[in-house]
Image 1 (cartoon, each protein chain N blue to C red):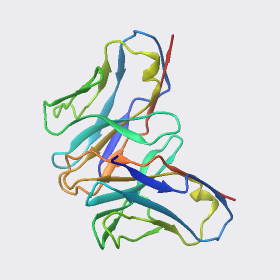
Image 2 (cartoon, each protein chain N blue to C red; image 1 turned 180 degrees about the horizontal axis):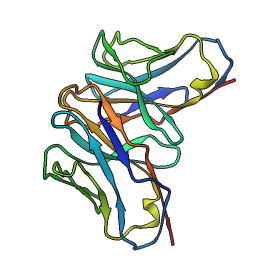
Image 3 (cartoon, rainbow over the protein chains, first blue to last red; image 1 turned 180 degrees about the vertical axis):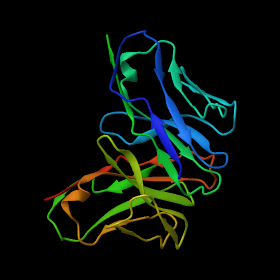
Length: 113
Length: 113
């Protein structure tokens, strides 16, 4: 079945540091890939998405590129802020069964001033 | 405001006492899903529904029931809750299509004693 493997956390960075959270996936067909963010006490919200190979999703300074050759969708941001502290989830939704969604374990990011 | 509403937000109950967690969305979405979030395990899909009267099992359906009698509502039923169902539960909805992101509720924290 489908699976998503995320970089283990927690990750602690200083403000303005560069962020990378690794995500690799296994799926049949051509899935869509997503990054969601969860702030304390809240539900998940979409951060960005990419729906085909070589697509780049971007939002709020975060970027991720759909790499089919390496089955990866790594999340990056050039300069993190304290307000970026949250849990980040990588997820996929397969084109063979749009009902199934698979999430990674989540990576907790803490940004210190 | 477009939203997914779950109730209750918090519940402490005892083993064997039937409970229902309600979920309602106001975006006319065809697709709805339930997840549980446990530390170190990410989000795991319990059940999903592609439309009214159409439901299917996710990865961890044991001990849960769902129904989809109306498009906007997708209740999660625990007929005989057990302590291993203590978790944080999320309902989500989306438009049809594997490239569509999901919209999440704020979560329901269940404690089964």
